[in-house]
Length: 111
Length: 112
Image 1 (spheres, each protein chain N blue to C red):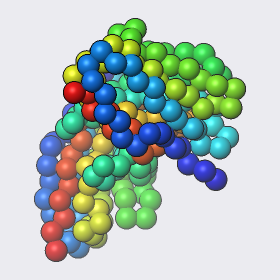
Image 2 (cartoon, one colour; image 1 turned 45 degrees about the vertical axis):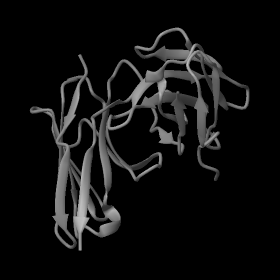
Image 3 (cartoon, rainbow over the protein chains, first blue to last red; image 1 turned 180 degrees about the vertical axis):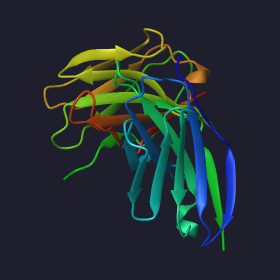
């Protein structure tokens, strides 16, 4: 079956790095995504990684994928107060187009 | 380039009523997916439309139905509303069945 798990909460200080972790169960996952959701808003696509890659960097964001352990992480460098939000990991399997989401990690950045 | 838009922003209904939510896909996108996000949860897939046909469905009862129009905009209809239908309904569009999904701002539905 498909399941995506994330830790519920992360608190960091402004300027530190944040690392948000995600595990998934579907070994046929093709793409894995990170979305950001601010209060009362929809989902904003941050970045994604194809399953045959192990790392992707995009400005302050670094995604690491360990396909053997089915573990995905999102590192945000120099975290700012504007990064405070809920971050969702999502995976898409090979046979279907739907996204399966985790329950989200709430990131709180304090000054 | 216009992003994904949804209407209305908020809606309040009572149990047993019916509701229609609307979504306009991003320019150039022909695929629309709908998700339900209950409070404190991640979004759950409802169904997807591709070229006006339902292309897949999640674990939702038949009272959840949809349409896609020739201009690729879409509607989500929910009949016989229940209290548990209270949620944020998100629409996402993509330029193909397997392409990246871009989300709209959502419609907040409250069922009393």
